[in-house]
Amino acid sequence: MALLVARAEDPRLDPFLPKDGVIKKDRIHLAFDAERKTPVWTAYYYDSTNADRKLSREGKSFRKDIMVPDSSSPAAYEASGYDRGHMVPANDMEFNELVLTETFLTSNIVPQNPKVNRGVWKDVETLVRKLGRTNELVVVTGPVYEKGSKRRTLMDGTVVPDAMFKIVHCPKERWTIAFVVPNSGIAGIQPSIPMAFEVPWLDVEERIGVKFNFGVR
Image (cartoon, rainbow, N blue to C red):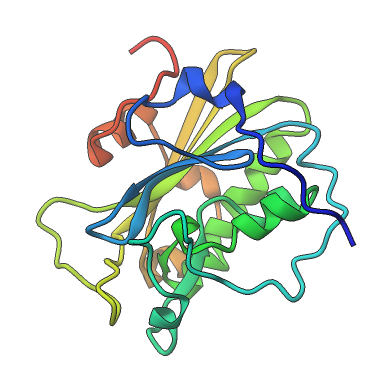
């Protein structure tokens, strides 16, 4: 069994992320929305280490994040019709026991439509891994709450997002791509083509009200 390693924040992320309200874990940084009980965004640095997938997620269970007391309860998702949707994918953290475990904390999940989570969203995550074979990447992921949309909640008040976003930035080559996938069965039944959900990354900033530092605007 792999040993848990000492916590070590990842300074490679700092130049690209907001400075305020950041919770820094081992290889994962995030900001949290206490009112909605979901992350605002999560971020991690993808390099060759992430591709060294030696561990298994078998036997891992979701747990409340004691560092984030306003995070949801795993039980709130039971019989809700929604998956516990990872923002930082567990599959990208199978190189380290501690970091893998942290992806199962409730500070890293949102209520996600099962067809989306297991369909096009999974394919977006796979595309990131393909890009990461030849590039080092900053990957930022989180929920989108559209203005004026109907508020849907789990039994503990966790708010269901209207969509999920993922921004992928390559510092060396200086390119950035982004995706917004609706959190509905419509996205789940469409042909699973991640590029069909590509949007300008500046549009993501506008929709979530957060500015990142990915270069020229």
